[in-house]
Image (cartoon, rainbow, N blue to C red; front, top):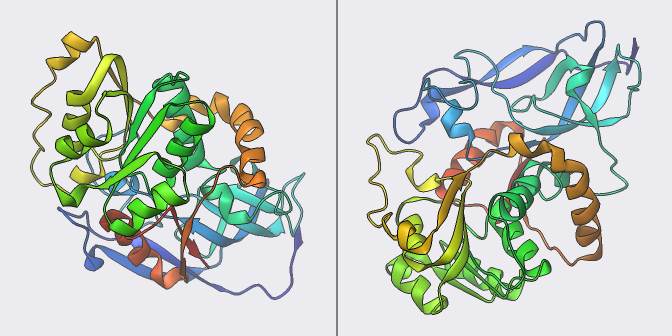
Length: 340
């Protein structure tokens, strides 16, 4: 085994101790001290440098059957992370290598080498492999181009548009020839960011009035594509503005994640018959075959500055939970990252 001398012996890790009902509360979680694990045969030990917090994690805190297994009570939670190999028992991995993996919410993680992917800190900042060049970026790319089948000249509406996924959807749509891109966000500052920095043609604050009315004003000729990160009234508004053969890609529904009662569905789904519209939900995990194409196309856009991104960085493993709750509140602009 190759390793670094004098590794710490204490590892701090976040555990789920009770399943939240409604909004998660601090007492549902615990920051626990454990021993730094020793990597076994074929494993590496990684010191996490950046960890990701994402809306989908709320679903894993529930025991309900979903597309991902629930977090186990009393065990470290999982999530995307980028770190440095500090000990290796695996061929092909050396101390000092940087890797992307899924054992976040902790300072140190031991894992089978097959679960770690090398990343190059010279090609892009390490944090981008959790966002603009990572899972959130691929989510935007696959959802817009494959699921919603964006065509040149389309009018596109994106909800949660200042978030990590939404901000990329809008920019990729413009780079791919959309005629008009409209975004919704939850503050005037985010609305300004969408237009001034990300190049959206129009944006509105959904708190300023009914979404359906604001969308009709922003897109008087209707929309061809809706990329949904929010659900609720945004989805109903999009159905109401959908053009003939319009497409809706359902990525998330953050507005209802903490509801304790089922949210009412859109009341106007019959309009899909008139418009021959299509609604399709998707998971990024079904589209990893696009990863090489995604990196090849989006990487140069990021390096050239054609595709801009923001990160909200929170410092310290002790603030990991607060960062996650901040995502649910919409505190972040762009990708929420915890720097350890």
